Length: 222
Image (cartoon, rainbow, N blue to C red; front, side, top):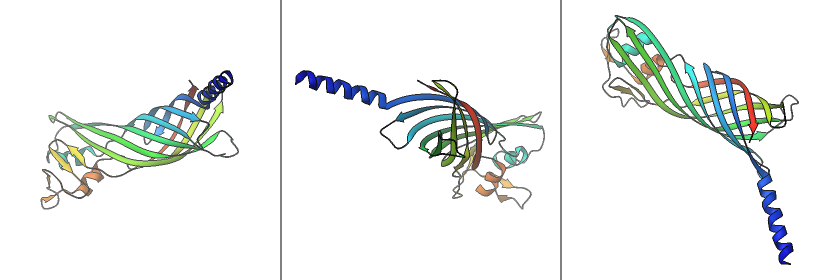
């Protein structure tokens, strides 16, 4: 009986180990701009879905440089503007198996999102350089299909839409919040020196909002 019990426990532990496995993936493509993403997925036969965590990096248009300067710094117009933007996104996905266009190895993707946005603005010859940042939360949905390339590797194609909730914009020594509890606002010299509002700042700075994505990459079973 002891031998039979020990064998049953050993077999059960082996079944548990086989029930769960991990895969790692890397994707590249469009994510409002050029984007890259790395992820790690848990496949568990005891769950009706798979779980994935991922981190992405995208190069974005940060906004209107001249308006950003007026709203966050001053009304000067000298210098040649240069700008760059990036967003680091964090994602947690539920991958629900679902046939898409007749492709059996496909998933519906749903999950929360986080974003760290930064826009950098430089006015060459104008002695002005500043950054505007924000941190946001949101959610996303999409579809993903896998195409087997070898025993351990799949080609992956996914597409969908993420949405990030508008958040406080910080720049120079100024901040603009969605409830207009703003700090050290600048005045609009083109509108009777009325103080700028969050609506003005959010229009000038292209922090993530609705973000369509379409990416392709590889995933490897670990």
